[in-house]
Figure 1: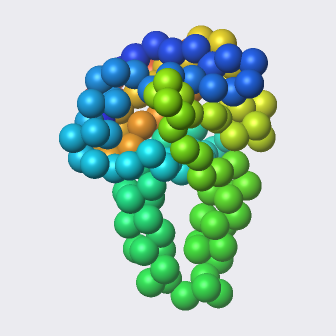
Figure 2 (figure 1 turned 135 degrees about the vertical axis):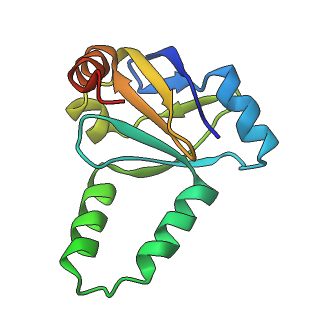
Figure 3 (figure 1 turned 180 degrees about the vertical axis):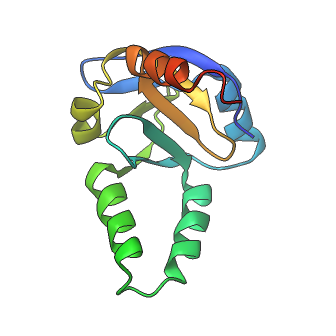
Length: 136
């Protein structure tokens, strides 16, 4: 389970290093080098190990293709999403469209979210946490 938060930097090419703590879990779970990075709101990115994302897709496959809910889901995740592969320096690339919309350049936060991780501009994440404060 991905938990905790780490600071990272996204360089001008959109690359960021996956935090060591999360890399250990990727290795332990034998997820492999492929990930799906997407967003449901264009503000916070989601970093899914591909095997976990494929489980989520399999759940959605049970919903009829004509379903508006399914179409909205597919449009949103595919608009912002891309399948990426981790490089030899434990780096992933944030898809350009998501990088621009969510301002994922420079200082970002990588946050554990159970089966996946979130990536957010530091200010965006601070505002979200402060706005939700006290709701735990």
